[in-house]
Image (cartoon, helix red, strand yellow):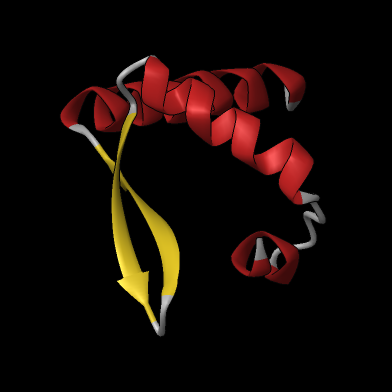
Length: 70
């Protein structure tokens, strides 16, 4: 959430975590639970499927941007 806020996107945990869970369910992310300072933390990592989807989304954004600039 801090990283998103740094880029101007403010999200509550109630918005962000369902998105992360859905992305994990779709195979774009995997999660790992770890105890840090006595608290359970969940870390997400992008999968190869997620990297492919991200790459395709960049292509679609570029295509849309080019069309809007014509």
